[in-house]
Length: 305
Image 1 (cartoon, rainbow, N blue to C red):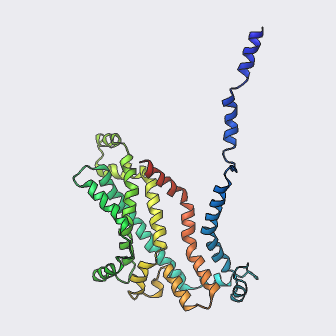
Image 2: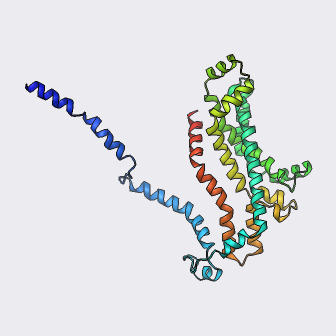
């Protein structure tokens, strides 16, 4: 009788590890205050990164007398006049169009050319493959600042100086090294057996590339696409030389150039300049925020590959 009771009790009582598992899972989302220094440093970094952006957005709701009286204060009174004036300016929307066209053109070019080059490096065996990959890697060490003058001369000779194509082509070229470095591990990690099975079923290499390989490498493609879009949207030095020095009109400027022109032409309107800057930053911030998880997932896949 005693043995039967003990057996029943043991069967009714779950193991300690099993009973504690739900508790551990329930506490996974809680903050661990055992390391307060980590959270202090993290909050400091967040404040340094986000603080100026918030300051610019809030200052756009202020009047100039209020801003000069207390630059660090809150708006008193709150006003949307600055934002309304910027949104009612046709030059602003033309510059939004210019930034959108150049950013989308750069993104499409980077994704298309990058995945094709990475496919050859990752899936084909040929002499000089390692040297070719190393050549793209060294492209990361070649900054735009030291090549801007010969680049502008080349663009002038090609007839691309002073127009949007003069921005898209160099931006694609300078974004390709990082794109290939990110995409090559993705394409290399796809099993060779999958390609062999597709070839046995009658699929050509081009068909395998478009129908199978591209969908499987979509996380990496999204990562390089977002990086290319945000990089093109925020570019300033290249548009300065290609568009402004090339004689393009104000309506053909990208938003970073538009902010610079607005701040020069209306230097006394400080809050108006801040509102213009805030609206120029907003699309890139929203796009990056929405695609943040895809960027992290894509980079993790590249590291695993």
